[in-house]
Amino acid sequence: MSEPVTPDERGVSWKILLPVGPESRICAIGLDEGGLAGLTRSYGMVDTQPVDGLKYDIVIIGDGGCDDLYDWCNLIPRIVPDGVVVNAGRRCFAKKLKDAGYSCLRRYAALPPGEPKLFIPLASKKLRAGGLAFHSPGSLRARIGLTFAKALSCLGMQSHLARSVVSLYAKSKEAFDRQSLIQWLSEKLGYPVVDLTVYTGSDLSRRKITVLAIAEDGYADVVVKIADTMEGADAIRQESNALQAIAAFSLSEQAPKLIAKGQWYGYSVQLQKQVIGGSCRQVARLTESHLEFLSKLSTIGRKIMRLKAARMWRDVKAKAEVISLEALSPPIRVALETILSDRFADMPVVCHRTHGDFTPWNIKVSNGKLFVYDWEESLSDGLALTDIFRFIYRQASLVGPWPGAQKVLMDMRSISRSFSDTAGYETIETDVILTVWLLYEYFAKPSDYLGDMLDAVLRNSR
Image (cartoon, rainbow, N blue to C red; front, side, top):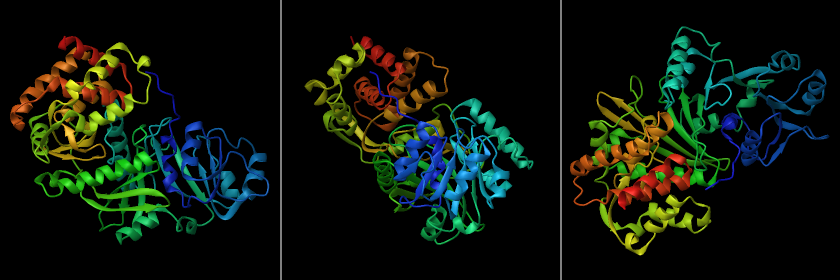
């Protein structure tokens, strides 16, 4: 099934650092399609070139903007007196901006250069350290790179972080004292927030911008999730419901604590207590600690229900009703027709609270104890075993090397059999649940790996 390619908007996730509301006028020069899409989603008036007679609150310069002095002579007078200039490109315009009376008041390293996923404040060693510790990438190469970056930063070096930088300029620091997320968070928390580290999130429609709000000394840092899409806002509501649901159970000590929810200039915003960090490590395989956590999670809201009543099955059915079945490959079409048939739709299955994105990069392990975050995909009626499927598949497909569909399925079935006894499932239809989960994942983000796995499941059931 072919999906339309949409521009990746994550490169402008730093937009939440801008001290402006949605009604502000913005001129964005030299940004790519994804960058412009991300800005216009949040701000109604975004010009790609200065318009005669207009003044701009924010001017953003990407890699394709302002090549010569003529550009600058025509651009600077178009900015309001307390406006902000953002240099989001590779070229340095510091001297030209200084000559025009602007100072660089905020600088953020964009990592990795080229396709940044993390924006880290460069103002001090402490802020750099907190930012570098905020995100745990999935790939070994990225983790090694991050380890070196942390070591160099601890030595006081930052040139390696400054290869790609987003710099915010203004004529006075008061430009950042109005309408900013930092100001809003400080008022919401009741204590000063100094700066923000910004993680761009996934490329799915349900993505959120995830932020570490770095507090003044003596106060707690806070994790903030911000949604600029309706789907993202739904994900925030879903996570909030999950955190509230598990708060009454012992697992609440191993998950974030929900602090508050709110709206900031139309964005849905969620604040949560930061999950334990420090020396916590990422583990690439399912251990006894993982299975113990999932076993406890499986007791929350456990019930037997018809497959057709479970949200995951209903989402698959809803997707099938709006696509052309003829466009699907034969294994996917057959799997879909099978799982939607009355025989399977009426089958009793085990459901309970699931995490939904139980992957190594959403889990920290300390002294054998798991601390699990990012509950946006959590379901109260999640299908049993699907967290195990997710962990194995995402690790194999994203980090690799991909061992082949048969090997991945063998691992899923083997661990599922062992876990079923531990969790106390009386009966479990592993391959039925596996097929629904594979279709659910495929419709969320098509992949040849998922198609191969569906094919293998069907051949095994014949």
